Image 1: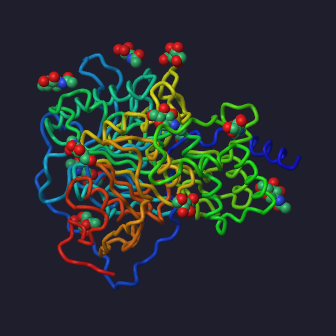
Image 2 (image 1 turned 90 degrees about the horizontal axis):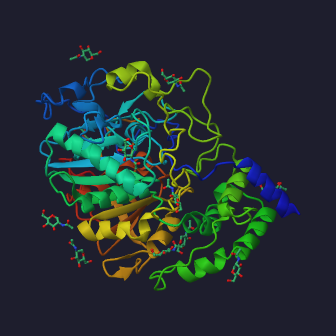
Image 3 (image 1 turned 30 degrees about the horizontal axis):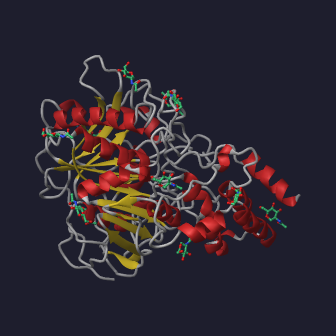
Length: 538
Ligand SMILES: *[C@@H]1O[C@H](CO)[C@@H](O)[C@H](O)[C@H]1NC(C)=O
Ligand SMILES: *[C@@H]1O[C@H](CO)[C@@H](O)[C@H](O)[C@H]1NC(C)=O
Ligand SMILES: *[C@@H]1O[C@H](CO)[C@@H](O)[C@H](O)[C@H]1NC(C)=O
Ligand SMILES: *[C@@H]1O[C@H](CO)[C@@H](O)[C@H](O)[C@H]1NC(C)=O
Ligand SMILES: *[C@@H]1O[C@H](CO)[C@@H](O)[C@H](O)[C@H]1NC(C)=O
Ligand SMILES: *[C@@H]1O[C@H](CO)[C@@H](O)[C@H](O)[C@H]1NC(C)=O
Ligand SMILES: *[C@@H]1O[C@H](CO)[C@@H](O)[C@H](O)[C@H]1NC(C)=O
Ligand SMILES: *[C@@H]1O[C@H](CO)[C@@H](O)[C@H](O)[C@H]1NC(C)=O
Ligand SMILES: *[C@@H]1O[C@H](CO)[C@@H](O)[C@H](O)[C@H]1NC(C)=O
Ligand SMILES: *[C@@H]1O[C@H](CO)[C@@H](O)[C@H](O)[C@H]1NC(C)=O
Ligand SMILES: *[C@@H]1O[C@H](CO)[C@@H](O)[C@H](O)[C@H]1NC(C)=O
C-alpha cells in the first residue's frame, strides 16, 4: 500500500520528466579565487590581427566584437546569422549559426561544430555556459572571458538546429534523425560556400540528445560521399543518449543512487521498497548478466519501456527523482551535488521546478542581443523550444527515436569505423545520463570487429594545470577522471562534471578537444595544453 502511494505520488509529480535532454543552465554559485598556486590573474593580450574570414560574402554576418550586450571586452572576430538549408532561392528554412575563427597563430583547415541536445535546445546555451569565448554561468553577475574557450584551438561553429530551434527560421517538417542530418547538410553546404571552407576537415561535437544528432549528422556526411563539403574527421559526444533509454536510465539508476546515498539521504523504508522493484522489474538480473566487460556476445534483449506501461511501476528513474526532490527541492538532475537555492540563469527556464526571478530576462531574447547577432528581432528565443522539432512525425520529445533507432544500433558503429576518431565522455555527477548507463549502451554495440569494451575504464585521466587570468572561470587540474580506448573509440569520465561537461570541467573538455584534433596523443598525456608556452604543475 505504501509503495502504491509512493508510485502515484511520483506519477503526479512527474508529468514530463526525463523527456528533455537539454543543456541546462549551469549553477556555479561562487567565484573562487585561485590561491594554491599563487598564479596571477591577467587579461589575455588582445591581438590585433587581420580578419581571416571577412569577404563580400561574409560581411553581412560580421559581428562587432566589442558590441555584445553586457560583455565589457572584445570577443574578437566572429560571424552570426541565418543560412538556408538548401540552395533554393525560395528556401524559407534557415538555421542560425555563430562562427568564431580560431584565435591560434596557425590553425589547420578545419571546423568544429558544437550541438546541444533537447531535442529542441539551442547550441547557444553551450556557447554561453560551456565552451564559448565568453561565458555567463548561472548565479554570476556578468559574462567573463573563458580561458578554456574551444576557439583557442580551432575554428568553432555553434549551430541552432534543427529548424524550430532558437533563432532558426521556418516550419519544422522533418520526422526523424536521417532527415535531420539531410537538413543539416543543406545548411553546412551553405556555410562552406559562404566561408570558403571547401575540403576542410570537419569535426562534429555535442552533448546529451546530440547523442542522436552527432552520429546521425556524421553518418549523413559519410553517406553524402562528398568530401568537398562533408569531410568528416571525427566526432565527440558527452553525456549522450546513444542507446535504449530503459537500459541507459532505468536499469542503472538504483546502483547510481546507492553509490551517492551520502548525498541523497533517502530513507531506508523507501530504499527497501525500490530494491524490491529493481528485482521485480528484472533490472537486477539484467545488470548482472549484461553489464560486464567484455559483454556477453550478441544483442542485449530489450526490456519493456516503463513509459509504455499503465502503471509506470518500473519507472525507477522518476520514482527516485521524486523522492530526491522531497529531500532536496533544488536537486539538479544534471549535477547532483547542488542544493538550494536555485541560482538565476540568463538562459531561462528549461524544466518545471526551475526558478526564474520576477523581472528576469532571457539573454538571447533581448532585442539588443538579437541586433548584435543579426538574429530576427521578432523571434521568441527559448533555450529549448516548446514545439516539436520533428514536425508531425514519429520522433517526439521522447528520447528514443523508434523510426531510426538509437545511435548504438548501427550508425555510431559506421561513424567510428570511418575515422577511428570518436570520443565519448561522461560527467560522473550527471544523473540524467549517467556514466554507467552510457557504458551499458556501448557494451551492446559492435564496431571494428568486436562487441563492447573489454575492460571497465580505469586509466587515470590527466588535465593540465593552467595559469588562470580569470577567477570567474576556473578549471580543475591533475587526475580528473578515467579513460580507455578500444578500436577507434575513446571513452572518458570527468569526476566533478555534471551533464554539461565542458562547463563544469573546462580543462578536461579542452584536453579532449586537443585529442580529437590530433594535437595530443591521449588522456594519459601530462604535457601542457598545446596553447601554453611554459610548463605548469600543481
Ligand atoms: C562596435 O561597438 C562599439 C560599442 O557599441 C562601438 O563603439 C563601435 O563603434 C562599434 N564598431 C563598429 C565597427 O560598428
Ligand atoms: C519539408 O518541406 C519542404 C518544402 O516544402 C519539402 O521540400 C520537403 O520535402 C519537406 N520535407 C519532408 C521531410 O517532408
Ligand atoms: C563516392 O564517390 C566516388 C568518387 O566520386 C565514387 O567513385 C564512389 O563510387 C562513390 N561511392 C558511393 C558509395 O557513392
Ligand atoms: C558503475 O559500475 C562500476 C562497475 O560495475 C561500479 O563499480 C560502480 O560502483 C558503478 N557506479 C555507479 C555510480 O553506479
Ligand atoms: C521478468 O522476467 C520474467 C522471466 O523472464 C518474466 O516472466 C517477467 O514478466 C519479467 N518481469 C517484468 C516486469 O518484465
Ligand atoms: C521516505 O521516503 C519516501 C519517498 O520520498 C516518502 O514518501 C516517505 O514519506 C519517507 N518516509 C519518511 C518517514 O520520511
Ligand atoms: C521574447 O521576445 C519576443 C519578441 O520580442 C516576445 O514576443 C516574447 O514575449 C519574449 N519572450 C519572453 C519569454 O520574454
Ligand atoms: C510513423 O510510423 C508509422 C509506423 O511505423 C508509419 O506508418 C507512419 O507513416 C509514420 N509517420 C510518419 C509521419 O513518418
Ligand atoms: C542491442 O543492439 C541490437 C543491435 O543493434 C538491438 O537490436 C537491440 O535492440 C539492442 N538492445 C538494447 C537493449 O538496446
Ligand atoms: C580503424 O581501426 C581498425 C582497428 O581497430 C582498423 O582495422 C581499421 O583499418 C581502421 N580504419 C581506419 C579508417 O583507419
Ligand atoms: C586561451 O587563449 C588565451 C588567450 O591567448 C590564453 O590566455 C589562455 O591561456 C588560453 N587557454 C589555454 C587553456 O591555453
